[in-house]
Image (cartoon, rainbow, N blue to C red; front, top):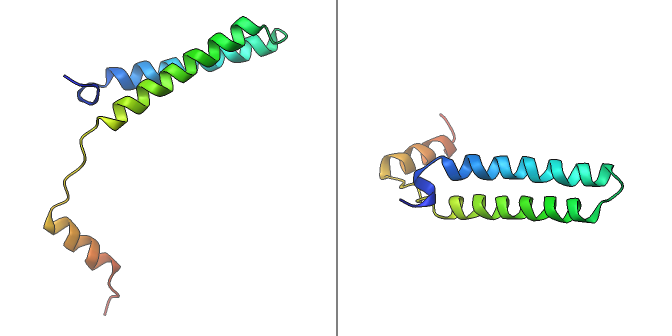
Length: 79
C-alpha cells in the first residue's frame, strides 16, 4: 500500500500544516520565541513534504478516446 491508496496521508499532512502554522503564529505572538517559530516551521515543512509525496505517488488518470472526443467537441464552434 502506497501513500496514494489511503486518505490518511492527506489528513495527517493537512492537520500537520494547520498545527505547524498555529505553533508558528503562537511563537510570533509571544515575542518571536525562536524554538516555537522554528518548531512550527519544521512541522509545517514536513507536513507539506508528506502531502507532496502522496500527490506525486497518485496514479495518473487515463484518458480514453471518448473523453478526448468530448473535449474536442466542446472546443469546436457550434453550428
